[in-house]
Amino acid sequence: MGVAVGVVLVAAATGLTQWIYSPKTSPVSPGLASLPCANGLPRISGTGECPTIGPAFDPARVLTAPSVSCLDGSTAVGGVCANGAQPIPATPVLGGSDAGFVTRIVGRWHWDGLACELGQNVTRENGRLVFTTADNPDSRYVHEIDTETGQEIRTRVLEPQGASGHQYVLTPEYFATSDARNFNLVVQNATTGTRDVWSPC
Image (cartoon, rainbow, N blue to C red; front, side, top):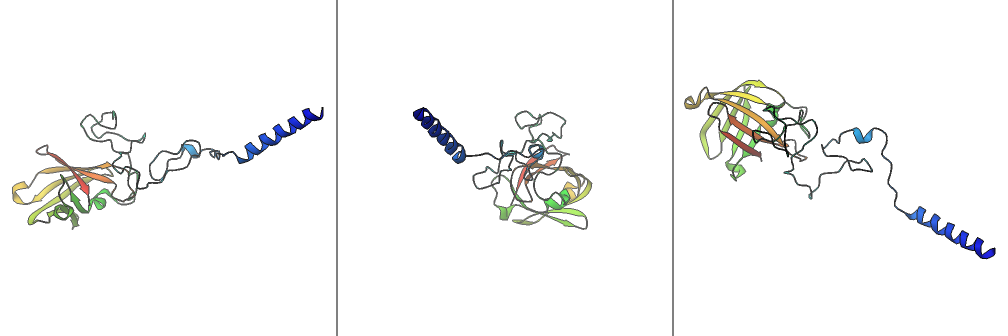
């Protein structure tokens, strides 16, 4: 009888020790898992915590939250719309959400491996968008803003004379970064159909 009691006590002590020192996961508080992370990333399963964006995170990863949509009306398949563009969230995912889209495109842009110093500089003058190229100061395009939404700007070129009247559509392609300009700028000439993707500097 004494041996049996001793075995039971040793087993109980072993089980209690393992339970005390075993790793615990904090339960997810009710409703937390359904709230989106401020940085647009999915919550970590089990803990419900939001992941942080660090050096190991791929900044080119396109966010595909449930609210994303395609501007051409198609449904994104594998993160790509029918027209080849990336899906655009209904509202900006990270940073700069209080500023208008026009305000957020002001600054330096580059494309096709062009150095930032040689890329386009976008400024806003008297309510118009002005595009200038650093290596060619005479290349100055002034755009009248016809319409602006949170996800699209439609413009009409006022000068130079040769491009006057051309219409452009500017839209964002969002990606994950902590920077306020968390998108590439898609510049499409609605008159000729040419489409370029500019990256922020």
